[in-house]
Image (cartoon, rainbow, N blue to C red; front, side, top):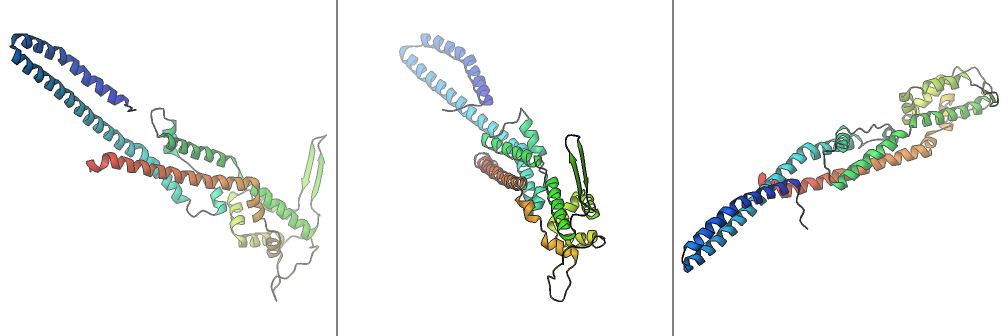
Length: 304
């Protein structure tokens, strides 16, 4: 079944209106001449009328098709320029920004779609159903991605890991816990290295550095523990021949936390969502390439 858009219907009605205006005039002239002429001339007049009507209808049909094609061509090229190209540029920019992301840096990504958000919210912009559904999936995934706060998770894991290292190396001195839920009283005391670490991790960039730079951890642990007055309750093993292992290097090597961070269910979920976002963006770009090829095949080859 052939579907006509609003413009095509208006154009057809306009053409039919002109035909209806002319039809009574043509029929009036035909009737007048028909009864004024002899029988042979009447037959010729009838044939002429039929040819004229058919020719007129054919002219209207051709004109309608040409005007419809020109209208569709203009609309398609305008939509390509004002809608499809801006969407493609925005999606390609996001893909280019995410080609070399590490596992941790990918979690810090801020996905922003000013063009797409505006088009999706506009009641006057029509997008192909498949493309619109794909873009909505992308924006929906981004909302889920942003809800997961990975920095507090990482900070908690690093602090718990450091506490475990302190208790292992120095014992429980300095750690005090008092909890009385009935009275609503809670008191926690930590040794100075733990407090230093807690304050250090308030800066998000410091968390980034501790996750992506192993040697940063060695230096940091050394800074916090070299001047700690509490005696060690363990003997630090030497990792290398003829070289003493310092406390910072030992804690960094013996108490890793990176796997704990990446294996945390919320972190894993956020990484999976990130991968889904990139895949959906790629799918949307592929759909737009199909649209561009179709516009080129139908309307641009003749124009250019």
